[in-house]
Length: 427
Image (tube, one colour):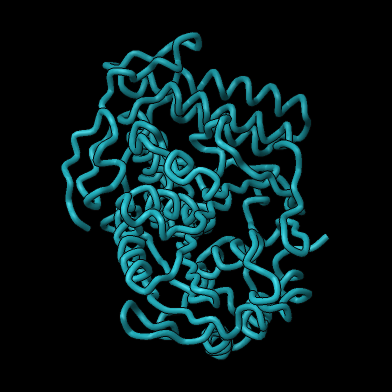
């Protein structure tokens, strides 16, 4: 079995002119934006450097330990950077337009870069979620509003699309985790007259978009040009899943939710090692989130997000690693959670029980219990909202108005989407 490191090792001497760009290449460049290239890759309009130069400069700066420069839980390591930079396939490609923004007060974590490839192609790579609580809070915010990162992604891709059209090149757009969502969202928001410059959109285990927030999916707009990939144990990438929307399921060497790490995905010479279906355990876990999302309106989702992440940050943590980092911070987190709605606490407890389940029977029982808790939790959070019963959960919130998006490019397909009042505005 091989992963993206092995692919670069075995196929890195084959140029893109010899073998055209494929889905594995898309995965490799989607995760490149996880690397902190601050001060190495120039910002927008400042000119490019080669991928080889960027990787070598980062390795020199890291001094043998690249971990502090990888803004991801994915195992992107020194080998990846050395193989990528030395490869004939990518080493002499040009990387440019690096953007990296982090703002705790705005719940904002965003980064992107663009790679110039041979043959009139460019790849726009959006960074996914890092280990910060700000980044993970923003992931949950996708369920009830358009986030700051999505707005910045739309602005960034719009600029890149305008350059591409003027220069006669085509764009590929991709990302992993939240980066896949940013790729999808920004491509959907492109004005219709610029959508022709998009060659492919890659979402690697990225959540789809809540229909109450964004009424059009990337597949609606781009059809087969939208490539959605999830591992056999996918939770993040199955959020807001539409079973009718095509997806590729890839095998992974990861255990359970650790399959979210793209370096565990298995690949062949020019394609992914595909599986037929998600693992049964994964389907059970996803049932919790699916039923909760279908039964919860936007206000419910917002309240849940605020309660959970305010509690996490109560102990002074800024990353997930620090949430339960010491007894004092743990006590503050637990004290803050005691103020949350009782059924919110019950739901969290059930999810932890599922994650820690020792046997299949225990997991099945825990998921069943957690599902019941999820369906009832939101009703207790906001008593003024009636929780739909299991029979009519799919109709809950039909009268609820989709979120307005105040930042839309002129000509964006969302301008004409039904049931939205957002006015045209230029990015």
